[in-house]
Length: 346
Ligand code: DOR
Ligand code: ZN
Image (cartoon, rainbow, N blue to C red; front, side, top):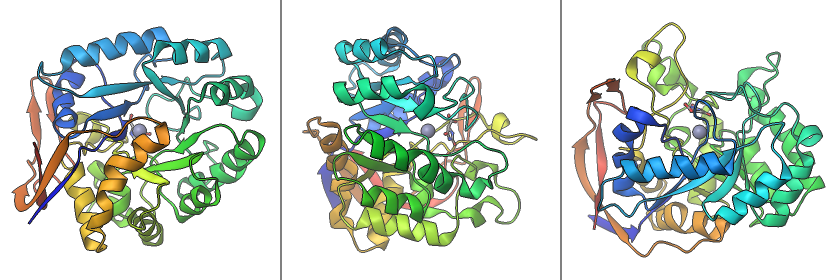
């Protein structure tokens, strides 16, 4: 069995920099036409000038025959100025502004402390320039249970935001709860959307502890209960245009995952398309995969759909146990397991 679909894009990706960038970029460029590239480097990409430089280093790291296009983002801080948004728009290479609540996740220490209080003029400028806000949707208050942080963020930040600034486009990234599904479905189509990762479609929080602590299943927002996973699967396989593919592939070296205080992030670029196909097949909705993977994202961002195609062949293939690089190993999602769908670029 074979499935040919328009080439997908990845609307949420961590490409890192330096050796790690060179190690991982090919796994994305092989399967995806474009990717929204996250700005949480050290130091973070907080200006258009830095995004332009970062884009250059990504292009340099790509194989010469690659058509992969990085779509850059800038990292919102309490200090970002409305003028930076004007520069971002004028650059033609910045496609979103990323909100990390300060302290929410990897390299978020320079993020926002009070979105509505400190960033409102910037958000108004983004609405004016039609640049979407890409949201890591979790509160950072340590007294809020980690499994409730997305729900509380929706109530305390996202609902007031869309009420006060309905013209702003918002992408709720890597949604993990039925609350996020309901929130996105309650907003105006075309103004609020969500990306969905393979891990939040296939795993629930049991996977963090199956047979012992599983650091390679640890990401943020953390995996949730089965009821949440099921709600997300129903949402994406319903054919709704509000949900689209965003892997949140977030490579960390093995030694930074398998240690006393391991990093959050799952490296899924090599397996993501196989896994999305598995989810849609199991839901009896393979006919809806192409819209989720290749149409809904560009339609939301106002970009053309890709012309190229990719083939998915139903044939077993084994995911490597780990990927070795001169600086160390990276363990991919579903390492050592056999998957059913193999993507073949054409
Ligand atoms: O699991 C995650 N890893 N979640 C994030 O929000 C950041 C990412 C990373 O950069 O490693
Ligand atoms: Zn991410």
